[in-house]
Length: 241
Ligand SMILES: O=C(CO)[C@@H](O)[C@H](O)COP(=O)(O)O
Image (cartoon, rainbow, N blue to C red; front, top):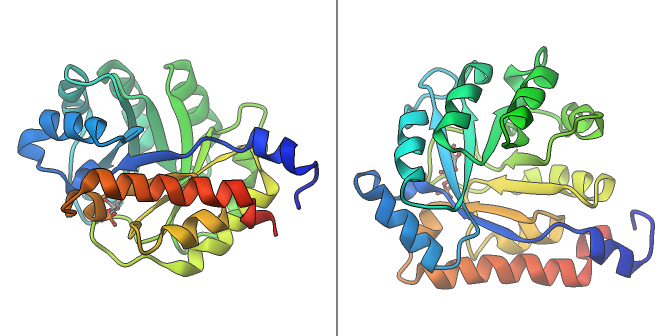
C-alpha cells in the first residue's frame, strides 16, 4: 500500500470521470452529439486537437471549441496533439476550453511556462505521454510547486480512434497511482467494456472512450460499464495490492 489506512486512501482517490472522445462522433452534428453524451451520463467531453504535424491527422481547433461551448456547459477536456502547445493556450481559454492536456515529449523545455499559462487562463492542466515515453519523465510535473492536475497515459499511439488497447501501458498507470494516490490518471485509446478492468485495476480513474461508446447500440450502457469498472477497483483498492 502507498501508506495510510484504507479509509484515508478511499477519501483521497479521485472521482471516476468518463469522457467520450468526440473524435468518434459525427462532427457535422457536434452539438447534438455532445448533448446526447450528457444524457448518456458522460462526465466530460474529450476533444482531440491534432495539428497534422505532431500526429499524422488533422482535426479541430479553438474555433470548433468556441462553437461547441455555445451549446454545452460540460467540461471540455482538450487533448493537444500538436508540436507547439504554447501557441494554443490563449485561443483555447477564449474559446471556453476547460482542460488543456499537452504532450511531455514536446514540452521538455517549457512545461512550467505552459502549466502557469494554462492555469492562469482558468483551465485545468494535464500532461500526456506517448506509449514509448517512460513514466518517470512526468514525475517532476506532478511534484512541482505548480503541479499538473492530471496525467494522461496513452494506451495507443496518438492520432486515430479505433486502435487496439496496449495492456503494457498499465505498468505506468499503476506506478503513478501508487506514487500519487490523489492524482487524476487518464487513459485513452482502445478503452471499452472489454478493457476497462485492466485499466481500472491498475488505477486509472479518467476513462476516454471513442469507438466503444459511439459505436455501441447502448452508449449509456457502455458509459455505465466504464464507471462501474472504476468504482469497483476503487472500492477494493486493487491497484495498491
Ligand atoms: O487521442 C485519441 C487518439 O489519438 C483518442 O482520444 C481516440 O479518439 C480514442 O478512440 P478509441 O480508441 O476509444 O476509439
